[in-house]
Image (cartoon, rainbow, N blue to C red; front, side, top):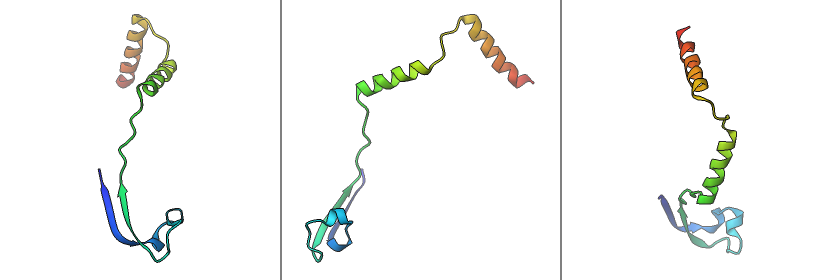
Length: 78
């Protein structure tokens, strides 16, 4: 993870929300550290999988599947 530290940084250069409660002439130490990406919980993954499955087409028979593959293959022969 990346980490940036600036010592003796002028408080006057901070964004307004970080400057609150500080003297404008003060010096501060600013540490910026990149957060690790949040990993979804098992329950979130389960919900995503269920939502994905709902969007899938109905199950087809073997004959329908073979016909669809042949149709797709034949598109390249034209």
